[in-house]
Image (cartoon, rainbow, N blue to C red; front, top):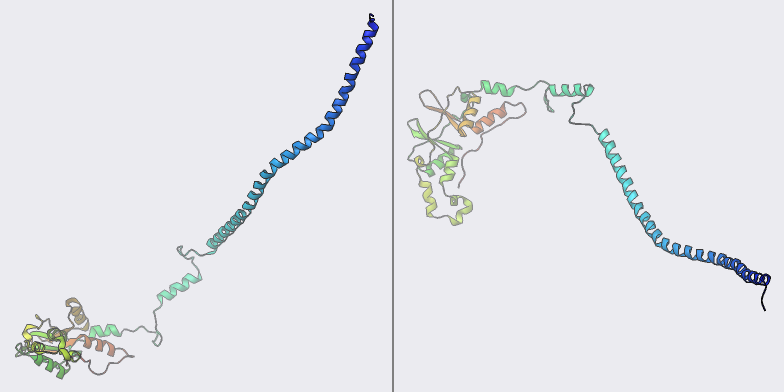
Length: 284
């Protein structure tokens, strides 16, 4: 049976109709599945972003102590700046005013110690210009001959309480022996503390002749020599005593450092030296 064109057309329309109706259903299904897919994608992105957020949080926590340290450094720098601005500059010249004028007056005023008068003392000036060797020299001079022994010289020095002995004959000065010369010539075992080890060789040192240990040549000064000249000569030549001799070379006395000290002390109103300083060596 041959179908007419009208029937064929109707069949074709019926076949096409289900396809059209199925398309809306597919779109509806896709619409229902789309929220689930989007939710799944969002969950995955959230999982990815959570580890990234954790390091950011850790970085913020690490930055907090750093910020506190920076604040402390800024406060310290600020304090140092304020200290520099407030501290006075000692190297700079002082400004002219009341303080500087006061300091100038203090430096120009004489230094007066407690117990002293307002007038400066000039005793040391008058002493050096008026006192001469003949005014304070030792007139009792001890003599010995060059051939005498150390034992004899030691006995004389102890008898006269003198630290020096003139060596010569008939008033002619040949040399001088001091306490140091005696101590250096004698044995150390002659002292009482070493009596246990004392022997005959030690006694032999006391028989040394004075001409072997005396100092020479001897420098002398005139009786009219001022105190300043005496001190200058002692400092220049290193001696601690100077015999006083006249123009003919005859010894009149002896000046030692102890005599100079005593003279300087006696010129002070607050200090007075009385008696004689022990100068003789005490070996026994």
